[in-house]
Image (tube, rainbow, N blue to C red):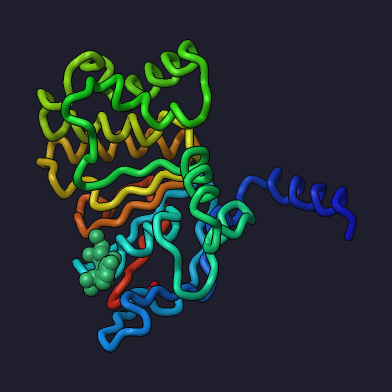
Length: 243
Ligand code: ADP
Ligand code: MG
């Protein structure tokens, strides 16, 4: 099949709106391979996640949620199987390509905010843009937009050290979206938040979904159970998906 036909096919498929943004095929992750104490953390996972959808990955502690997110996020490599993101196979990307891929396409929100306490909010959020080679003017614009979306613009010059937990989380959201990623991965995003801040987090998540982001949230927080904008809840138990 010639390349042109292929492109046409893909673009027809795209213009219908929905396509498989993330495709996970027979994925396995074994820790301590080749030692006596092997641990099979993910077992033959198959999963498809459509673009612009919001998916909740539910399971008790130790079930494999973070491992799965980190494989999708190219932070670790699978033992076997593949992950395709927007048709591109990412499972075996060499490290340098993986970090470029992350910088362009992914946003991460973690339970521990992973911010630099001694830097201002604005500077923390600029960091992901530095390797992408934007001008200072572009950086300032993108940072302001991310700060506004995350409802933390008013604290832009404050040191992260002086922020409350909820504000730190909003700062972490701004950092995750400043590169305008297609995919946002959230690992236990409300674990350190009180109910009020968890609700604010959910509101921002809804805004991101309305911006057509593909979102995966790993959490066992019941706050994600009955949300109208959630497309799918996936249950994971002992490294196995039980939909
Ligand atoms: P969850 O996020 O659902 O709590 P994780 O994905 O963090 O679960 O962990 C799944 C299982 O894999 C746990 O039993 C954990 O101890 C194990 N595990 C995770 N990372 C490693 C590692 N680097 N080395 C060995 N075992 C690991
Ligand atoms: Mg975890």
